[in-house]
Image 1 (cartoon, one colour):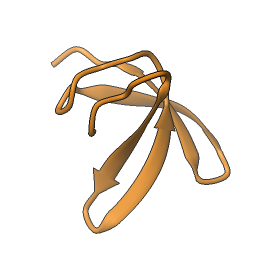
Image 2: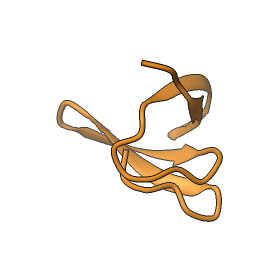
Image 3: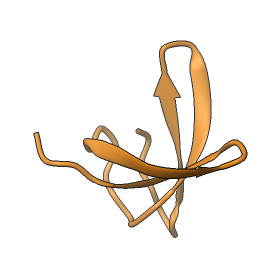
Image 4: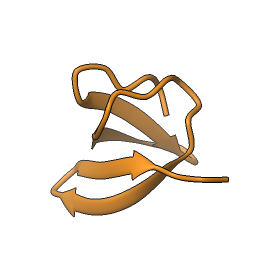
Length: 48
């Protein structure tokens, strides 16, 4: 994803962009989707 700052960020999956909510993470961090609220995905850090 792009960096998550202040709990919000953006993630691209193929040609779609999603807003994401989760802990602050740097751009390119691996995340796991833990839930969805409309067009907002809830994410957490994932291990490789």
